[in-house]
Every structure is written in C-alpha cells, then in structure tokens.
Image (cartoon, rainbow, N blue to C red):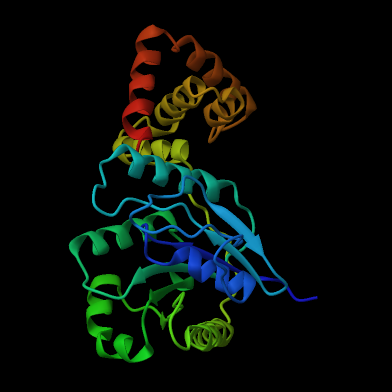
Length: 279
C-alpha cells in the first residue's frame, strides 16, 4: 500500500484553505458537516490546526494567522501554535502550501510569506502556491507579480465556487487540475525541523551570544536556565552537559550551573522567556 500524500495548507483567514482541504479529503464540500470547518474573513480565525485524511491525501488545515496586524496577540498566539504543532509532528510532508485568494498583492502578503518560509525552514523545495477563486490564465498573466512577491515556486490555480450555474462541474475540474499537478510534481516527503516556541528562544539566544569566548560553557548554562524556568528539568540537564568534553566535565558544569540558578539569574531568564516567547 502506497503512503498517503501529506499536504499542509497555510494562509490568512478567508483565503480558501479549508475549502481546498475539504476538496482534497472529501472530493467536494458540503453546506454542513465538512471534514474542515469553512470560515470567512468576517467570521474570524480558527484557533487550532486540523488534520484529516482519505486513501490518498493526509491534509493539515493550519490555524489562520492575522494578515493585518502582525503584532497583535491573536497573530502571535497563532504563530506560536503553528510552531509547537509542527515541532511535535514527526511525519514527512510532501507539500507545504501557501494559499492566497486571487487579487492584489500587498506588502503584508510578502511579509507573511516570508514568515511562512521561516516557520517551515528546510521545506523550501516542497513549497507550492495555491491561488484560489482563480483560473490558470490569471496565474499565467500575473506570474511575474507572483514571483516578485513570493519567489519562484510552482503555482496552482483553483476555483471551487459554492453555488451558481455549473458550480459542481467547475469544482470537479479544478480538483482534477490540483490533484494532477500534485501527482506530477511527485515531491518526496521531507521531515521538517520546525522550531517550537522554546526552541526559537534558544535559537535567538544562541545568535546573540555566539561570539562570546565562553560560548561552550556559558551558552549551555544560560540556555539550561531558560529550560529550567520553563519547567523542563530534563532538557535543562541535557543542555548543561551537551558539548562537554567528557562525563566528569559535564557533571562539574551541571553542579556549577545549578548553583547559578539564583533569583537574579532566574529573573533574567524569566524575562527572556516572556519577551521572546510571544513571537
């Protein structure tokens, strides 16, 4: 039995992600009782990532992010949720899709796509763009604009109207085009190393202090405190001994390190977690 084709769908609210997800899993979408709940921009964003599958596709409808206010709490929480979800996901992803509705490209589109690539770093070769409410001719006519904003990636036009004359036939034709393109691309599944929120903190911290001479011991100590404050003692211990020359040196560093977990250092670490965690 062949493995399912795994597809992750990312994009802001009201761009058609859930409709694409339903088409892939159900072969169509219904007024009610769909595998993936369909929202629009006026209803508001879903608060979690959803997964469903059929014999061919395993689809992840990723929690919506706010496109208009990147500094808002809902946006930050959504990004944090995406990172944490995919940091725990261990299966391969064949397609990492950015979904956008046909229309004008804005600086927010470009900024959000950049963030999308950062979250799914390592999966660039498996990125595809899906333009909804769209026919292939529009993609061809606007290919340069798409490349200028998103880069050079395979772009698939889909149109899944919910009603109107010939709507069902249009949906079927568009689904055939989408599945045919995914099959022809035949991307090999990749296992991403998406950073969770706490791992992102550590990564940013390492970038800040990487030039310090005592990076081996100093960085291990500081990151261990961050993990300790976050309630992860096992990871904290592992970080302390990581990179040690031998077990004896590792234990020595661990003993010294835990003596440093005094109110001052602990307070600094808590501030680090609080400040960077909301990204």
